Length: 112
Image (cartoon, rainbow, N blue to C red; front, side):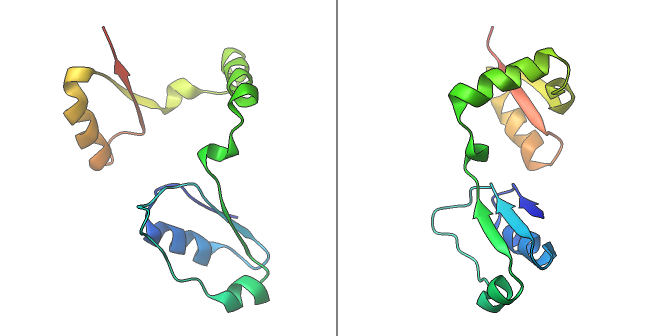
């Protein structure tokens, strides 16, 4: 199975190329609306691959948000480990710089 979350066409192609015969590639990144990529119809059919898009993880908020909160409270969803920075709104440009440079995974904007 291959996954792509960057929203970059090159990443979609790489994830698809890395998927083995009979495997599935899931793309959840959201590139620009004019983006497209070439796909070999032969590899899709002859290698029995699947390419699937997933928007917001195919989330059902009324079901999934309470479940995620419960998992977090039980210590089974370590959200805190994914948080790299807490910044004030005045530091929003720094937050974008951190993302651009690849120094941030998840950031929270704190309103005081």
